[in-house]
Image (cartoon, rainbow, N blue to C red):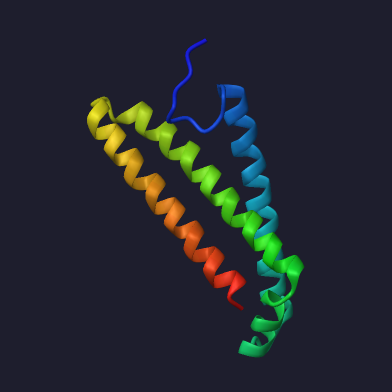
Length: 115
């Protein structure tokens, strides 16, 4: 079996399961956030800070951030593998996207756990 170091999973099936699981997590997070915003008519800073100061919301947000990282890593790898044929350019683009995704994760962790 041929494995690719740029792929997050060990195989295509593993990548498929990871991308579907991360999509479910992101969908749940989005539905929760839309519902919270819709039910909080006067959304103030205090309400927003109160939401993100609970441990459950911090963990849920961290889980969503990791899901974004996984989803984007696999998605970018698949798109670049399909459409960018030059190996050097594909590797550079993939590196840039993965570094950006990790920076977003680090910034999200600092922001969420800083509240």
